Length: 136
Image 1 (tube, rainbow, N blue to C red):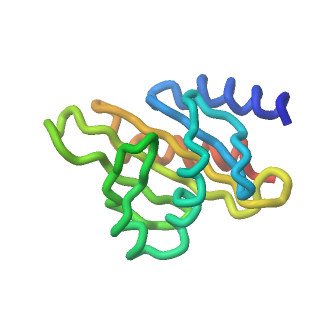
Image 2 (spheres, one colour):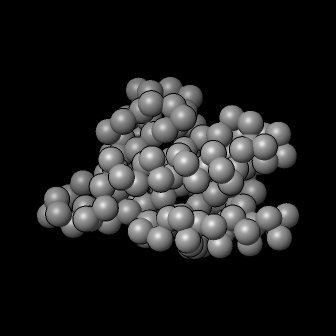
């Protein structure tokens, strides 16, 4: 998978250059590509975001210990923003699920993004990227 992982990482660097962080992983918890050191314990909760809307809103999206409040729960997309501090300096986070991804199993893509990048621009970029790079 390493060749595929490298290709995904290179494509992400080009297509998602305004994302602060990116992470792509499969249902097994195998990281396909990432530009940060992933906490393996955070992968299952990211997958669980898609199970129940109320739970997702209650627990938020956790990446490297940072909580992002879920504002939108519209599978295959869940996204929100980290609250606290100055709104202009808040960071957004979006997760996209591809049901039939690489290897025939669900795959996930996650990005974080800082102002002036907003969800209205970044979420469609993530979804397009996932469709083009993670779908089987």
